[in-house]
Length: 343
Image (cartoon, rainbow, N blue to C red):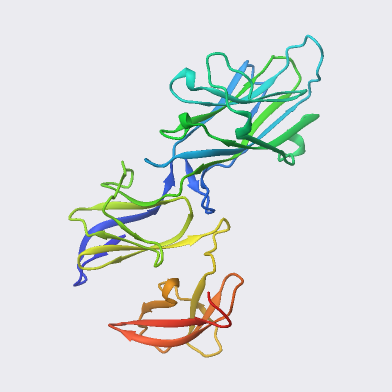
């Protein structure tokens, strides 16, 4: 988007993006990030290969620890447990570049799942760090062999995986018989320390680096950054979901105003300003209005025509009403109050 100076001339180009944290999109619940393709990431026998592999690199932003890992594991097979038979199997592991930093999370075959099995020369994860819950089978009937099961896996990560990133790897071993087996991984989420910062780069493709001088005001939901003297592209990185990001340039600084949203894309306890040219509507959201929840104030550019305003909440909460309208240097400030209690 073009950023304009105090006199309206185009001064430089600026891009503002919602951040991709490592391999994943922000999940909006303050828990870290999830990979952008939820899956299921499916491996199936019958391809004529004895081993198939799927993997994803998981790396939180620099300086942020990866505390835990959640994912769904599923396995199904038309095979049955016969003593002496070498069955198809599906395994999920964590790995870094050093082989000794590899750990098995699970190995599944027709009889069931073996959790945290030993891996010679690798890491052994602690049983206390693992929580497993059986969940409904997610695949369609035409993808489902006779026997099948799936689990939601939650793992607290040891220090070796907390910094610098790691890989989640799924392997399907095929004994090359004619009986179908499949395994999948889905809904991968990395739980992290809380993080919220601004990154910038000289081009949209990066590389990006943290703007250490940016000042974060969580109450007013704004980052302030001294105005750069060259073209830059910016993105906000957070362990919470971000809604609209609005650039407000001043004579000497960039102000990045943002909304925090929940997993469904809604701003928590959101107060929205709507307007109409008639008292009875129809009303529509004022998209340029900036809400300062801490001060219960909404600011917008002064309209050129007559407008009628109302406040609405998009989630349940105490009702609100407009208390005062202020005119401040070409803009309007709508001050509101909560009816019946504190917000």
